[in-house]
Image (tube, rainbow, N blue to C red):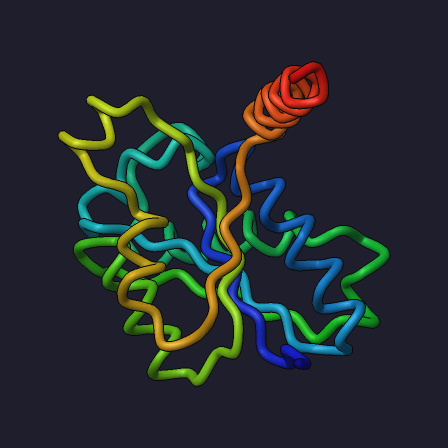
Length: 167
């Protein structure tokens, strides 16, 4: 299977950064397009965006342009030329559904995204954007755990294997 059109949604977290790394590697491997997107649930949130310069709040279009510039800066310099990359800022609510709808409308073949691995209570109360995307996406979704979570899971697996080997 070859994925030629890959979407990487980001919330600018460390986990999303790790997912972007995987997305870049897959796009390289398959010679595919890499699309990075950010979803703003409320256009009024743009005025409080932490990466924007201080001072009077610019128009929403200027703020979206600033976010697009930030998205472009996430692409490793070595990959800017060889990979066909695009960045997208969209307004949509809820975020998981917006990602899935965007993927369907633009015929993406793979979504690569981070999952925050919240505790059971937080997950039950807030749900998971990644889970909503997995359930509603029109294409395969590769979810990436935070590196610390992956390390803990690997350690647990080793412990379980060691215990199984003793029995």
